Length: 283
Figure: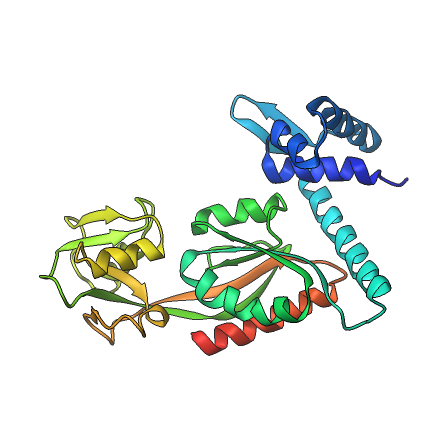
């Protein structure tokens, strides 16, 4: 049995958007045509791929397995076609979809991958910056192929490549009077709390403000709105910030995760090597 490519494309579009209307727009087809393709695929497989309820669209366990199949199939196809068309085995092609947290994506990931993009014009990149807790769902749905996270992920089907350790310190502005407020991404961000607990600094009555991402945190500290726990690798050029206790660092392991496959493309090995070198240089 062979599965229809158009049906698989429809399936992937829904998994990546979790919305039938958006998926249909993405493929430039009607929603009824999209639904028919999904029904045809489910009929071929004899199983349900999506569950629709009041909370939205959810991918079934079989659907998650099918995502892995589609990724391998697309990787093989891209690898073969790029070599065939270019008639050059060294030519790379494909889409690099990678998600991670804000302190490393533009400062390390993009810089690490830039040489590949500059040398191989058929390689495209899609970077997604999210909070750590959101990334695993994107990887499961196939919205990203690579995930950069800490040690909180433990799944047998995932490959884990250690990239380094991000060292974080407590900083404040040199230009404003010291503030007792602390700046975090959002209420679920535990960076400040974990830092204070590690060094036995009272944390129950601290006042926190939230500025969304690492760039907001840095801007807030520079404006004297509060203190924040920030990565050392982002502080080199910020001469208006003061590290309060340089020897007190909160160390966060940084890992690259992706699903195990029997076959990996040439592009994959280049991506992993580039990230390893880039993180080693920065962290």
